[in-house]
Structure formats: C-alpha cells, structure tokens
Image 1: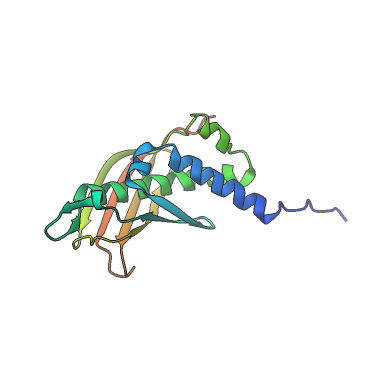
Image 2: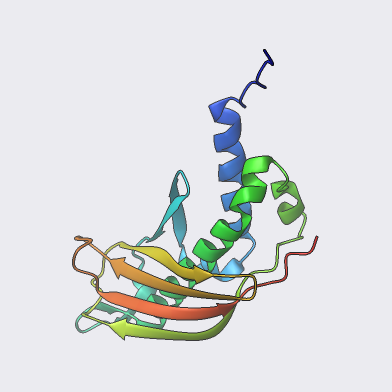
Amino acid sequence: MMARPRPEPVQVVKQRRDAALKALVEGVPYIGFLGVQFDRRGDELTALMPFEEKLIGNPLLPALHGGATAAFLEITAIIGLSWGMLWEEIESGAFDPEAIVGGKLPRLPKTIDFTVDYLRSGLPRDAYARAQVNRSGRRYASVHVEAWQDNRSRPFAQATGHFLMPRRDG
C-alpha cells in the first residue's frame, strides 16, 4: 500500500491564490485608478467597483459614466480570462506572484472587440460584475460580462468581448 502525499494545508493554497490575484490586479494601474477590486470564492471572481464621485458622468441624474462602466466590464473580462488561464499554474505552485511584483506581468489577453449594452443608468453606488467565459482556446476567447448594483437579476450593463489569447510558452 503506497502512502498518498499529504495535501497542502488549505491556508497555503488560499495564500497562493490570493497573492496571484493581487499581483495580477496590481499589475494594471488603470484597475487601481478605477478602484476595481476582486472577491475570490474558489475559482469564481466577482469584480467590485466601489462608488466614487469621479465615476459620475451625468451629475444631473446622477449616473455612472458610460466609459467607467465599459472599462469596468472590460477589466472584469480580462482579469476573469487571465485568472482562468493561470489557474492550473497557481494550483500546481508553478505560478510565481513575486515575479509579477518584480514587474514580470504575464501577458494578458488583448481585446479584439468589445460590445457594451447599457440596460439602465448606473446609480451612484457600488457596482458588481462577473465574467462568463463562453470559449477559451489557445488563440481566441469569447466572454460575456454582466454588471449589477443592488439586485443581481437586474443588470444595468452587459458586454460581450472577443480576445486574442497570449502565447503560453514559458
């Protein structure tokens, strides 16, 4: 009877996942400018764009700026795709978050096209988004993203994007 190797302690796995996500997000300065954060539950990411006055496009309504909304959706798609692409490396321990901190960000997917549907005005409050990867191959990926505020079943914007995937040769 062969002894099975002991699994890594759960806190070590969580620390590695959190460090990888933090490094990925902090590697893109515009994500920090918008204040976008990511909440991770296992392999599922939810993006959060905390409300700030600078995000208002029409102060008379007031409503979130369409550009901020589109950027939030695109960031959610790209980080979601990258997270999925790096997941196996993160899980195996082959991914080195310290390399990102040192400025060696893995190449991110490049946007081919990105179509946003503005379903209703974004209110002056926190916004959330989740990306659903419809297809992710070696060269091409298709992603759908929905953003909501108070009620997940009532999105205020959604988008579909197509991305060129980076080559993954070490």
